[in-house]
Image 1 (cartoon, one colour):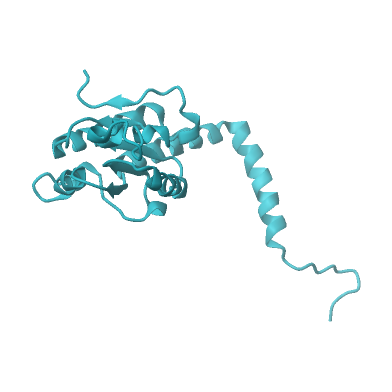
Image 2 (image 1 turned 180 degrees about the vertical axis):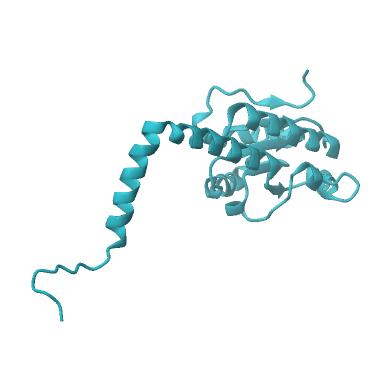
Length: 197
C-alpha cells in the first residue's frame, strides 16, 4: 500500500538528459575543461581525417589507368592512407580525372553534394584541369573547377602514380594546416599545384 502523500513520477529520460547536460555544461565551462576537450577532440579528428582519406575515384579516360596503378601493389597508395572507395557517402576526397563533358557536369555536382563535410577535391590530369586536348571544345568544360572547388591540381597527361601519391601527401599537409573547415568556407584558401616549389 502506498501513502496518499507519495508522488510517483514516471522516469523521463529526456528531462534527465537535459538536466544533466545543463549541469555538466556549466561545470565544464567553469573549469575550462570544455575548451580542453574541444581542442583535444579537434586535434584527434584532424589526425583521423588526414590518416584515413577515402577518395571517390572518378576514372573517365587514360588517367584512370594511372590511378589504378597507384592503387596497385607496385605503388600501393593504401600505405599512404588512401583507400579507394566507390560510394560518395563514405568518401571525403573526390578524385576527378578525365575530360568533363557538359552532359556529365550534373552527375559530378550530385556526387560532390552527396559527400559528407569536410570534403576535398583533387583534379588529376590536363583534361580535368583545363580540358586537355579538348580545350575550348563545344561539349567539354574547361576544368572541373568551373563546377566545384578544387584543392589539389596534379598536372600531366597522364600524370604518373607517384604524382598522385604526392598529391595525397600535399592534401594531408593542407588538412593539417587548415583543419576540418567545410568546403564552402574555404574561398580564400589557394589550391595546391603539384610540381610547383
